[in-house]
Image 1 (cartoon, rainbow, N blue to C red):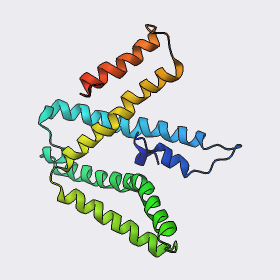
Image 2: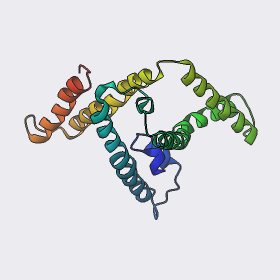
Image 3: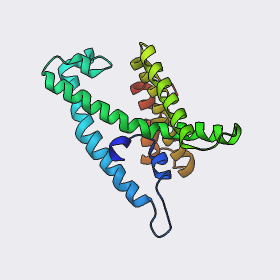
Image 4: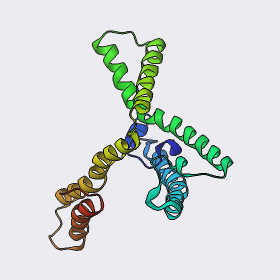
Amino acid sequence: MAFAYAGHNVVLEIQATITSTPEKPSKGPMWKGVLVAYIVPVAICYFPVAISGYWEYGNRVSDNVMISLEKPVWLIAAANVFVVVHVIGSYQVYAMPVFDMIETLLVQKMNFKPTFMLRFITRNLYDAFTMMFGICVPFFGGLLGFFGRFAFAPTTYFIPCVCWLIIHKPKIGNLSWIINWVCNHIITKHVIGFNV
């Protein structure tokens, strides 16, 4: 779970699949998983690669970092294997809500029987569709960047600050108001490029 999660907002989908009782809430294992997910993949793996990659290549790096590398060949091969393992695991986590939605629609609205064959066919068709879409769109890396910026930035930087200001109603000018205002306006406008 920690490696598939890798610091993304899909944590609620993961927590929804864990059994939770008042005696043993799912909050404990989830908190441990989130800590491992941030410390191991994000802090130990992603940041050093991002920093050293930018140090070496600057902004000349392509969407697929592996294309920018030339040698050693064994390192490129190992990195590609790790990417495949990571994508296979994380894809299952991210696609699970879509699988659930499709299967619920087919069973409840179209009166299909909830069998293994229905699950097998719908999931494989969805996998084939997403694979073909990714292959057929030549600017897929740029498209991912656009949608990531369009969806990730507001939900990560803008909305939490606005919600905190609305809920807590801090006095205008105190430290917490200033910090949230700075995060809300300056970071989203100048760092991310959104005009709020």
